[in-house]
Image (cartoon, rainbow, N blue to C red; front, top):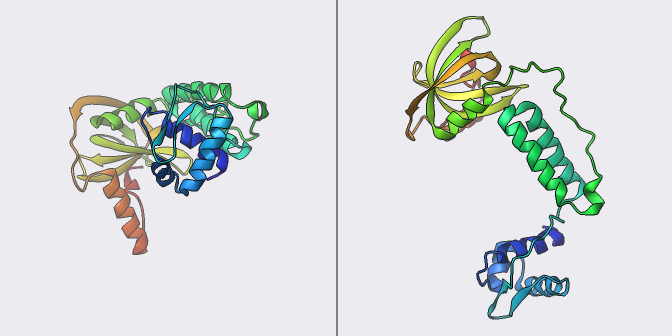
Length: 238
């Protein structure tokens, strides 16, 4: 951890307004207490209102706002590129949230980074505007653990409908893929989001079921990989 990051983390740990000893801080930051004492002294000299003493503990005298000075150019670029991709590929709701989040990040950047812009972009002018229309309801249904009825066209242009339990959404080989527990097949199945032609939220919710969860699917894929078995990820539906 860079020293600037460590100083920032110390302030964040003390913002809870509870007394923390140097040893507790050292354990959280994985450094020595001597390093903590030196960092606390430097923070005090820079005007951060920290009260306390060695052997007793430390706390912030009042609320303090510290800008995220820990960002370097590469970290900021990672944020910018990620936000741009979400704006393009993440659906309307997450796309709007990403735009607002980036505005908040840029508002607190130090001056040396305010003009920095990544040259990696995620343009949307070539995309079908309806391609991601179901991402928001699918994402929300997965969070609520709500069963949905999918209307789907597979790679052979065959139409089907089935009730599924949405578990997660993956960006897989250039498209979003919905991982589900399919109630018709009684097994994991994946569906390409751009081939979903309609969906209905059924107001029926599913409980945690051993063997039918996201972690179970990941374990299954890892076992197949370890055994060098073909991994189709249940893509017979896509």
